[in-house]
Image 1 (tube, rainbow, N blue to C red):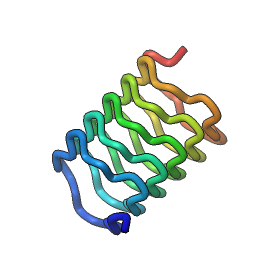
Image 2: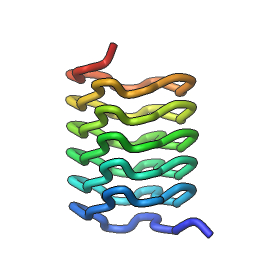
Image 3: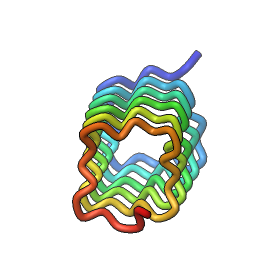
Image 4: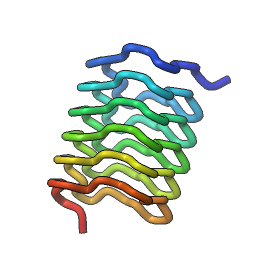
Length: 117
């Protein structure tokens, strides 16, 4: 059974290499969290706050990040393929080598991002 962490305060928490596939993190506060190489495939992160989070190499395949705030986050090498990114805020995020294949990028804020090609 997937973890239910809806609206949890996980600010600054370390989830390095964690398997959070299918977890419900809707509305969770993950500001400054370390999710280096974490598996968040098919996870629900609607409205989650990930400002300044380290998401390097994390897998978000088929996840739902609609309305999430990832401003200033490091998503270098992250896999966002087939992910719902509707209305996500990536302002100032590092998107170097991030994979957006098949992602829904409707109304996404890519302001001041770097590494996006």
